[in-house]
Image 1 (cartoon, one colour):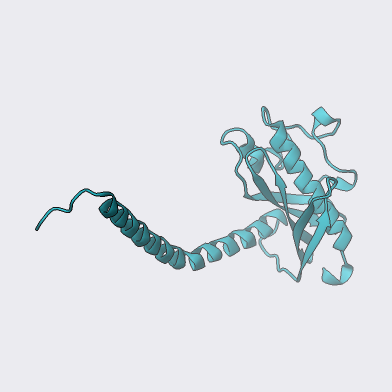
Image 2: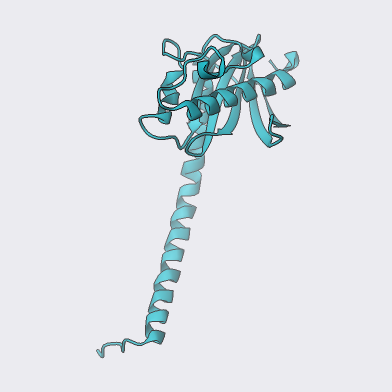
Length: 193
């Protein structure tokens, strides 16, 4: 077999062929993984709701989607999962590394039952500590608090200890919790619980 001549046209054709082939392979792999990824996210959400509501026997009785603007005028989307104990609320803010998506559980009176981070891009070893830092028995515990008057880090005159060397993430996390509470408070209806 004769070796292909190393010309510009041949190089462009070979590169184009390889790019098209790789595009087809990637599209096929994406198609194969769409359903498993969606199932995994659904499972994580269901486990998250049980975790933030501090109960393994929780049944979602209703779901609401709410759009409201924050203090900066930016529209945000909240998903509220009502149950017999109160509600679990999804809230997203911008952390240090990117979006910080939190699921917060509230009882009927608005006290925080628990939380979990659904997605984040915070720095490992620093901002990523938010998944534990604000839990029951930890330095910045928010479980049991009612964010009626909003939660802030001590550096901003609040009552919550910020994650060491990660004040931006701490502020973003507490903003997500405060926004989740406002969304819950604005849509809370006795007939949904």
